[in-house]
Amino acid sequence: MFDSNICKIPDSLLSLGTKKSFPKGSSIYKINKEITNCYFILSGMLKIYIDHENGRRSILDFAGKYDWLGELSLFCVEKDIKENKILEEITCIEYDLNGLRKICKEDAEISYYFATYTANKLLMRSYRMSEYMNYSLEKRLASFILKYHNNGKYNIPHTDVSEYMNVSYRHLLFVIKKFCEDGLLEKEKGYIVTDFNKLKEISNNFK
Image (cartoon, rainbow, N blue to C red; front, side, top):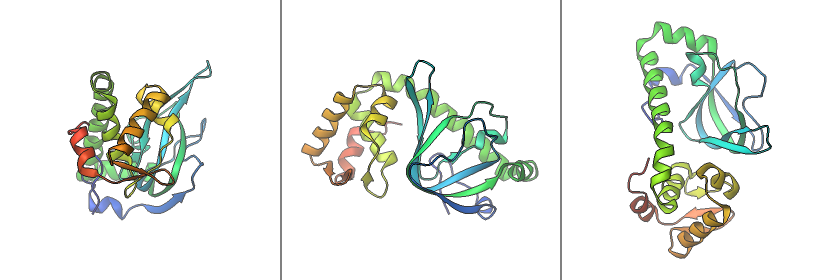
């Protein structure tokens, strides 16, 4: 039924969870709390970040439609829970972690799915740093918008994106303005994507 951003989720897995929603501004996981559930996102967006002792913040990733949260805990104990904040209301399927671990031991298809998903996710993260050092912001931002828009609407705060991409806020605004002037985006309570084909041309299959 659903394809994740990396691989197809088995239909049998979808029926095992419970549908749930989280409001904008809330967190799914709490610091210093044990992870007891994992989630398959159907809609919405959140950011994952670390606040450092020196007061600076590093945004590690964003998670959106058809991404998983907490799936690493199926295979290992995550001692350091990352800060997370919902940017757009999230609708997801919630799974009990212990129950899902048991199913992974009994169902080879589901176990292989999670192993494949997790391996590919980690590989994509490892590639991202080198790619971001070797491609223009225009190319990276076009790919980012294509990945994280919500039904044609793009609303991720510029401060978050500039931190994530390790560029200045001013540089990011310059490229956003250019995209608007070139007819790729339209400013309207955030942004509306008006030319998907042109964004795809610019991104040129950037991961």
